[in-house]
Amino acid sequence: MTQPPPPPAAGDGVPQGELGPTAPPEREPVLDVLRGFALLGILLVNIELMRGPAIYDVLAGRLPPPSEGVDRILQFGVGWLAQGKFISSFAIMFGLGAAIIAGRTVAAGHQPGSVLARRYGWLLVIGITHMVLLFPGDILFVYGITGLILLAFLRVRQRTAAIWSAALIGLVTVVSVGVTLLGAAFEELAGAAEGDPFADAFQGFFADRAEAAVAAHVDGSYLDVIVVNAIEAAIIQLGQLFVIPWVLGLFLLGFVVGRTGIIADLAAYRSALRRAALVGLGLGLPLTFAQGAVDPIVLVGGGTGAQVSTGLLALITVGQLLGAPVLAVGYLAGVALLSLRFGSPRPLAAVGRMALSAYLAQSLLTLIVFAGFSRYGQLGPSEAMLVVLGVWAVLLLVCPLWLRWFRFGPVEWLWRTLTYGRGQPFRRGRDVQLDA
Image 1 (cartoon, rainbow, N blue to C red):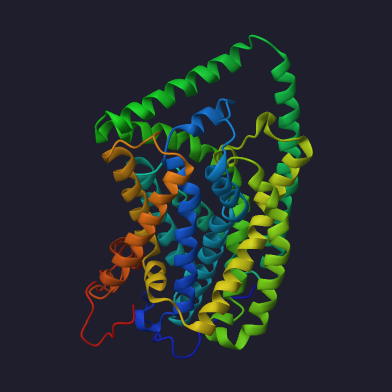
Image 2: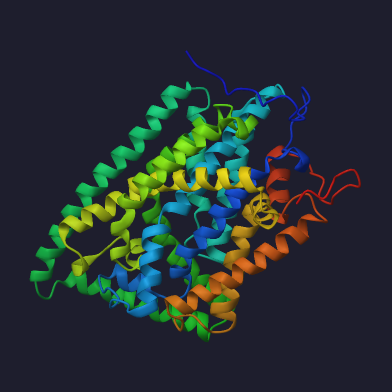
């Protein structure tokens, strides 16, 4: 038997037969805070790909020398507390959003599959555009593919979806640990061999790509940057396709939560949120501690080489794939509790309301810094962190101001218009309160 998504709670403003996005006054501000929190945190990891061509050295097996002082402290913190945690948080929120849309669509008398198919199909297009024009490490493309796969689970029972979520995350973790250890053994054997023509060809290719990336960002035109981005995107996105089962597990986790009814009255679920925060933080922090042992760019590139022992390598892999989602749950539950206790921070909620636009804006702003001001390959971890803080400040200032005049972020408006097949109101009406 199948179980359709539950209808939205009373008062959500979805008349029978009318289909459209959630109106601003009807949004749950805590959910927007959670999206904003996850979105800003993603930049802590993405900046490692944005600030220089070190990813090519990692892919070629030439690891950067260990950092020292403040740089090492920052990298340890990013590896332990950010790597994989915010992308997990964002994926969980994506699945939760799918549950909300499915419920609203059913309540309006429509089939959720067609709406979500258009939503994720257009997300694929946005992701391809983003990775070529702004940032090769785009995640929207993978989210679009995963969202289309999620359609197969729209009408399964919550218990079945929860089992699939746990099974996918667990299976990917076990397989990845095995593959990682096997890869480490092969690296050790390959290291003993001399004059391997395949290894030399790989190193030469990635060395050339690193030089081309620096030349494009520092001395080239924007067209040169686009060409470099397209090649780098093909490399990175090919690797990201292998983590789709893991992302699907996170989508399903959020989807299950979204169908429990917790969103209709978060305050009534304080005790459940408190337990989730305690378990998530209590288990997630020690599970992911080993990730701080290596440079975050090494984790992004999927290699550690001789930097760590085989046992530590296994712990890092477990932290990336199992510990990160657990800690993400702790983060989300903790931030939700703080928002319920002290109120939702309006700037952070505004970033969450226009999270897609803010995600693209992060890439645009960092591209201006690293290409427009020729800082690519010039900044260390601590200097790059100043760029992160600057981007955060811009988003936290601009997003609330934007929402004083407009109902959605510009990309959200386009995405909703394409999804629902009709133009959405863009400017705020007089009857809409300033709730940003």
